[in-house]
Length: 97
Image (tube, rainbow, N blue to C red):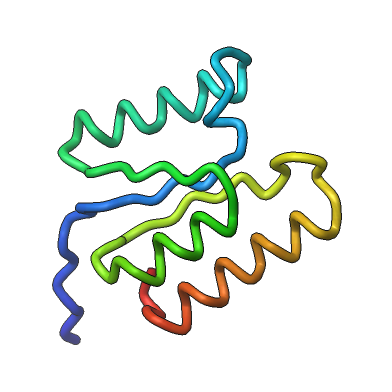
């Protein structure tokens, strides 16, 4: 059986409204993840809202991975709907992300 060759992760988009904060455990965790990805040669793009994430993801087809804070901001149905729309818009462009 043949399998498709996997290429290395080159570009990741992190969508988290908390990235604009200067402190907090959640922000430190996301920053540590971004730092680790960068140390492995992955370009990390930060978006501070789902709207910004949609604009970034739809304009840049080279994004390999998207990490979304599902509970950002008020953690309500509006935020969840925005995150879902972000995922749908990305999958329309690239089913492998």
